[in-house]
Image (cartoon, rainbow, N blue to C red; front, side):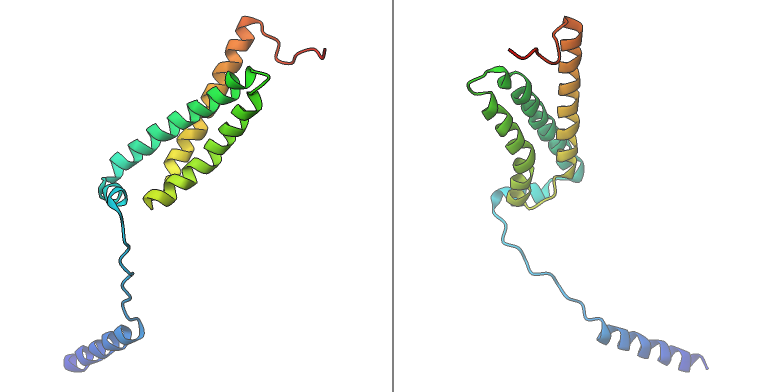
Length: 134
C-alpha cells in the first residue's frame, strides 16, 4: 500500500516537472556602474536613493522659488525644475537598471518641505503672496 502511494507521488512529481519547465532568465550585459549598483546592499541603495532624491527636491525648490524671481530667466528655472523632477529619476532608473521609487518619494517630500518653508518665511516677513497688478 505504501509502495503504491510512493509511486503515485513520484509520478505526480514527474508530471508536474514536465508541465512546468524551469525557464532561466537570460543573463543581462551590465557595465561597471550597473554591476556596482546591483552589488550594493539594499539598505545602502535605499540610503543613496533618499539622499539623491532629497538633493534633487531641494534643487527643484530652489529653482522654483529663488531662481524664478528673475523676470528674464525665471521661466527657465521653472522648466528646469519640472525636467529634473520628472525626467531625472527615469533616466537614472534606466541607466543603473534598478528601481528608484524611494528616491522619487524623497524628492517629493523635500520639494514639499522647501515650498512650505518658503511659504512660512514669506508669511512671517510680511511679503504679500499675490502681488497687485501694475
